[in-house]
Image 1 (cartoon, one colour):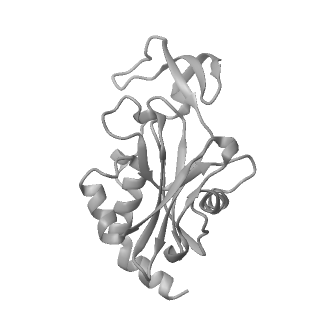
Image 2 (cartoon, one colour; image 1 turned 135 degrees about the horizontal axis):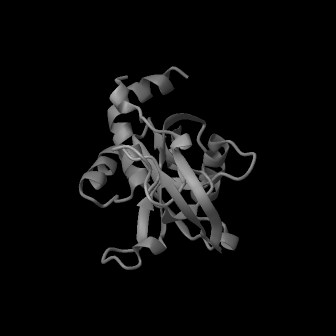
Length: 209
């Protein structure tokens, strides 16, 4: 890889002058006063940032290679409350990683809880940071092989106020939904575009299992 793809600076070029919690609820927010090295040389003046502190997250695209169907979920999302579009969003099965859990374990658990089915095998898509300008949430994405014919119904944990509809979508409709903006959240868009690129390779891999 060319050196231009790697940053010149690292953690040693950042000074955290203070850090304190501002809020601890459904979201946790810390206040940081910091300064960092500048590209032009020297250090910045001290400045304030608020950081949303989140555990790692996991998403999994459930896909049936025989039926060529994906299993998605639809649920209410408060982040859409001020938008003109419906706040019931079509997306991947997803969840947060508890202590001592592996991301794939979480993907399997959330698949059972949110869709009623569990993948028989899975491949890793990628890892990324959701919105590093304001939060530290790290996401691991997978694609899991399922029998879409067994999917359906409404799922979720009542104690977590979950009311989750299972939606089975053909491969073509899945791709078209991204292109039309019907699917409009980053995690699902990333997974679907990965599936477009690796679809034939994925089918060969799963055929060999």
